[in-house]
Length: 233
Image 1 (cartoon, helix red, strand yellow):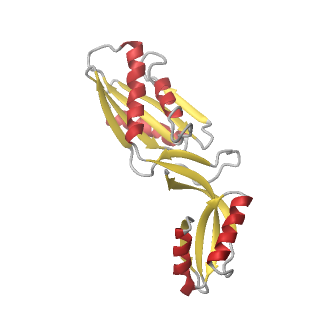
Image 2: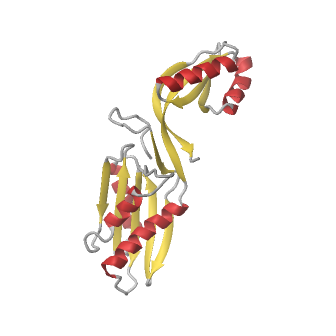
Image 3: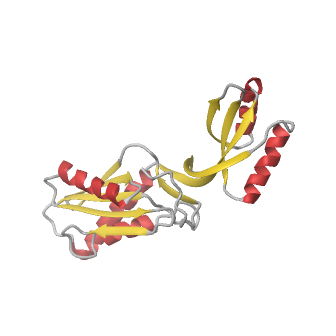
């Protein structure tokens, strides 16, 4: 899974990745060859390579275990491997399927994702062009069906409120579109945690909205930033 810590070098504040949970699998058949695509959410190269190694053991009798992965909010790490297929016919088409995937109109921001295509040879040669199409379509078909989420860099802010008023204020905040990041109960107050867009303008708007909802009794206290999953629009 992707790390929650925010890299100071990251320019991106949002990207798309696989929803947290188990690996996603999809299979196609091309001229009797089986192409099993496995998508896994991975936050670093070690975890990406661990996914590939695990699938080599699981599908130990397959001829090829081709792979590609894209990592980081800025997609700074990109790797691919043909694993014995003719050079450029497997890993690169898989990587391009990840990089060129549109997650919104004109948006290509898929990252922290490893794709492995396990091939069982069916006895019929596909040729270079056929292999490129098969590996590309295998990954694209899996992405068509896989559960994806947005991962946003948000500022975690705290709001201390009297216990008796906490439930109503939390409901009002949710209704106003705020993303709640948790609740803690202190002896003197309930502390609501809000995940807000990172930046002065967003924080100022949130503070104004909070003041209106609480009749001026609640104050926004900014904290650190975290990467948080939110549903795709």
